[in-house]
Image (cartoon, rainbow, N blue to C red; front, side, top):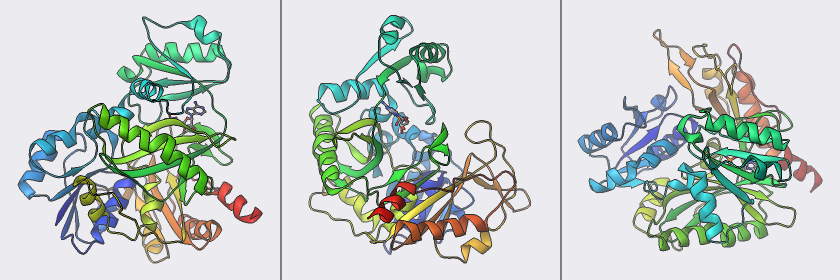
Length: 429
Ligand code: AMP
């Protein structure tokens, strides 16, 4: 079978690498891919942008693609799966309406409240309805969120009420473009974060291995929020009890309510959850796709055939399906470019990739490109993700950092402490 992967980041490299391992798959096409995807066996990059829905559809029809897996949220929110389905093509991901769970934070907060799914108390405003006095009457810290897609940057944690008012006003003034026309102001939640990612077939929820990512730029979870500086799987914070609560209180009611409301959900569903000290799984956000960088460590542990799982989901056959996991832990360390997460420098030549290719573990590419003279150069903020496997998080981490240390370019930055919470738990336990 021919499989099309839409996207160009580290998640899409991991999806392409995984799909190419399936004996059912003859060819993997990645639109547009990166300098790493083009080197995978059976795999070819295709020069169509991830948000060019008409171009993707025309390409998939011309190439007679059997299965498409959508990596990023933007094409999902634009309705790529609706367009493919209307043309009779199999495309794994939610419809445009179901993808509103990620595309609109105001929609999602109302949805959660309507269905009594745990989440922070909140209010939603436009410029016309903004009530600064209400914001000033709330307890700080407060979290201010642009409603629409803002490349993971539209969430600001505000230490004071005044800062929250100023942040909301900056969003109304266009700081995140149209994404900030509507703003959610919500209570700050204490706890430990976990990513809970599942495959959904409209009715059934098949949880994938648990994971935890590190959103802040610097060691010790300090510095600005980023798209994610590293992730590991499994995440010990998700104990069997917490897993059960997230399934019962978040995933199953969400999927059932979407189906009842006439927008059944098919695809990867990612809940970002803040686990409170009493175990309550408060929803911080939903993503309508696999996580990046969680995909890289999670798929490094998946032994089952991902294309068979996608097929089962598209045919509403996920009930009773089980995923076979490598019991080892996986740790992924993101190597980022100078300036990330703000103004990123691009075009720096990356050294050490050949040496790393001969070492245990796997380096997934994200923001990489080939220069005119054939060198692999940086082309984005998050450039690579080095994944190690090991019988403990500590050993997996050693393997990942050995890979990271083998690679360098001018201005490369990465955190030294990915997985520290899990390592602390291992040492304590
Ligand atoms: P989101 O995109 O909504 O997940 O927000 C990005 C990050 O901001 C989350 O991963 C959390 O670390 C943090 N965050 C968002 N909402 C809250 C909240 N209500 N309380 C505490 N932290 C939050």
